[in-house]
Image (cartoon, rainbow, N blue to C red):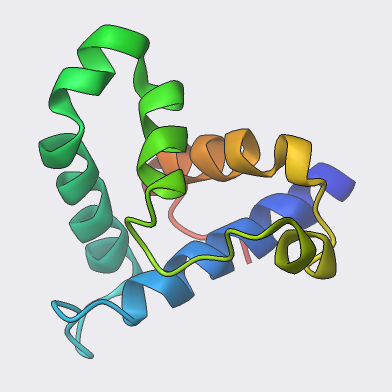
Length: 104
C-alpha cells in the first residue's frame, strides 16, 4: 500500500509543478497537463531517450529542473521520500501516469 500512496503523492507533485509552468492553462484537464509535460520531455530529451532509455532520460530531465519540483535532499526527505530512490520513483511515476487516468 505504501507504493500506491507514494505514487499518488508523486503524481500530485508532478501536477503541481506543471501548474507552475508559464505555458500552463487553467482550463487544462489533468490529462492535458500531463500530456503537455510528456510532450515537452520527449522533445527535449529525444537524444537522451535513444542513448540511455526513457527512465534515465526522465531522471536527467527532472534533475535538470525541467519542472519546479523539490531537488534538495532535505526537501525530498521532508516530503517523506528517500533521496536515493526519489529520482527514479519520480521518473517511473511520470512515465506511467498518462496511462493511468486517475489514481486518487
